[in-house]
Image (cartoon, rainbow, N blue to C red; front, side, top):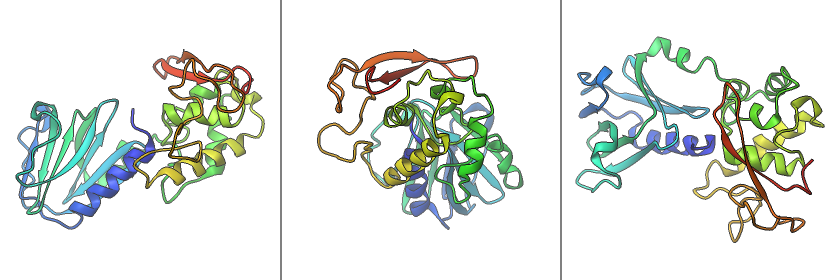
Length: 258
């Protein structure tokens, strides 16, 4: 599933192309909105909220979520699409651009005045203009018995972190993903690190948490069986989930994390 920085860049690129432009064609390839025609409507802007994308179009908001496989592409007219047409869920065209949303996990249109309702449940947005670190810490601390590796993924507590950042943050703070939140030393420092990491990567195509784009860009994520970049111990892999979050892969160093 894309991380919040990926969605932020998608919104930025879509906004640069569509901001203030009039739609010449729209095609919603989902049953609920198959008859909707937004030709003649103006795209006011495109913004991200956590892992959600909001296109403000006329009196409506197009709310989409990429989930695991989704992506938005921008094409010039006449350019071949890089993914199969049958995967397209939304097509928005202007005089200059064709914006295509492929395999979107969520597609819905809501009245513009109600657009906050679709993201109202989200915690503080790590890349939002109203980022509130104090509230994020308070939210995480609400359930001290919950594994920190699950709490960090819960978008209701803070919005924008995915599985890559979850694993990398736990490594950098020296804690196992299974450690209860209440036993994590200096939770504000972990939240601050999460904010600094995602901000540092928000304008990069290639993400890094190790500080380099040459060689290993992640400390533990996707490195099961490989030596820890700090101590040489083999990185281990497991899964972690609960009733609120599906099982996701975890990676950790058994020596550097306790």
